[in-house]
Length: 594
Image (cartoon, rainbow, N blue to C red):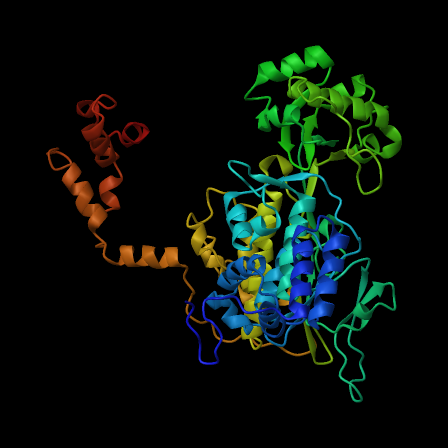
């Protein structure tokens, strides 16, 4: 028999839902399974209307949503999000209370930044110029990205997420997962809204305090009245926030990439075809030579992933593109070489189809192109000979008493080199780093230059990041960059070096430098180093040459000048390399050449 609580309600039994909650639970199920941007937004807005909720900061929105949505499906998702939100760096959603954030772009990195800013307790608004997610291209995911997405409940929205050994996902599907998480936490998302420009606060603040706003299209959209103190650019390499963010170009040898998406009908024959996680000419020359002899297609590498589409990406050699008629005329200028009027689209489709056929052993039954967001066959050719990186990741502006923190994430900050699969991973890292910057700014309003210097110090690591040099304990990853970068030095860039990134009419004085902040790894090294005697190396060297009567090591300077000390140590471990009897203290040059 069920026990009864103080008010006579049986404990251990589910409480009856109100009609509104029951209806909202049904809509929630539709929201979770929504397969398009439009459907996800419409069901979410419908659910909020039924529950009388509107997007707002996390402490206001999320607890109320949880109370009103109590289905088993919702409860399993709340458990995931609760665990994430409980991390101490968010301070129970109060770390950035009162801050207002605007994010330009609803791509994966923009949405990932929005989620973190929302967890910090800020009011977050995302502007997305499109009304659908249509990018079929597939992203390779580093292990920490898979772990990160699982912790956000990715499998609740997409049951096949990284099942088994799968380590990739389509951009469209990734956007849907992140969009749903952001919406459930209370992020406000506006589709079909384009950010045009940044509007400064008016000079006259006597009647009404008006802060930083955005010029948008449509001009009368409510987002045009939204005042914010943090602005994040996440709209890809076109980067609307050009002012104050100069870009450097990195040029390599000519590299022409082709991406192609073919329809996946999910038949048994298609399921049997093996993916190609990456094959390069230098590792499998016979494969590419056979392809060239059979089809006339000459590639440097090729990748094939199976997702919502059959996705192929390859690097083609220019000469084979000319011989197959894909490129009409040969030009030295890359932009002119790959301009649309110099590319035969029909020949390009045949080239991609033939390469896909050969690479899969002609096992795919029907290679029909999927459709891109322009309604055209989803095949593209582009140049990644040159890539761009922003000189800085952040800047601060102040006008008429209103501060604005700006930052870039994703491709706006650092363009990826696709063969390394680094785009999504480094994009996510930049999103987490930008959110940490927002948190630092909320906690250190009196030290704007220190906030910028810290962000730029972290940015210096981004381009060098690989799965191997990130921290191995992914369960400990958090917003704090020291949990992710084991060799982080937060003083790589000093406050005095970032003065040009802080544009203000107010004089900013540098406070005296505080003690250097150490990462956990550096603290361990310091503890270890503190117990090593300063003469430990000298003592070790003396022990190595103890049996060589003619050689004495008394210090770490003059005792080494004639080269005999080093030769003796080498002779002890590899006597076959050096004949010590032939060496003389008078012949210093010969000794040191040994």
